Length: 261
Image 1 (cartoon, rainbow, N blue to C red):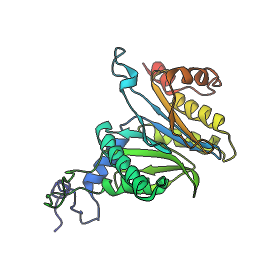
Image 2 (spheres, helix red, strand yellow):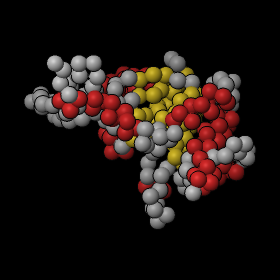
Image 3 (spheres, rainbow, N blue to C red):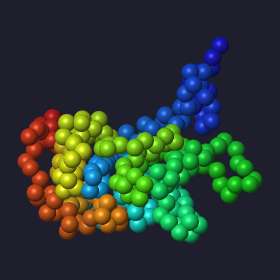
């Protein structure tokens, strides 16, 4: 007789008879409650955009980091628990710097993502005297990692709490990822320019966000194949991009919510 679900969802390393790790599934569920993030890869570079949820109009937007630089040639957008994201990003920063000091070269983007995913699975019920610390649960965050290296050029990767990492041409994570991915399938093409990718990323966020898009509640970054420097846009840089967006052709999530109320 198999035990009940509650007997298997308490231990992070305990498989159910069906081969499921419930704690990892719960971590994946946490991402579906997080801010929506969009990543788009082009031949010119990669664009990341993520909604920034402000619980109060008195909050300072710059204090809410949803996009972080890992190294000068790689950075990420997050969805889920921000504190967990900081732990993963700090680990990746150490790994990229160690690679630089050891080999005198930038760490390949995939290797940086690999380092993140290795830590994502570094949890246990028991401690190990040879290790400084052991994570007691899976990380409740997913990352869209953008970077450029000599071997593969511009790249976009998705890393999730299960330790899986996958390369995408365009991807979305977070609470509205299904609607965002649907728009990416319809409108993305590999020949688009970086400017077109910027517009598409913000158009998608405008469509799925439950607030009116502005420079306070969205964050954007890019890395170009030419410069290879990860750059987070300031509010001043975001304004002209938002102003040039075409008018929406379908009701946005904000408009639908207003009609329902």
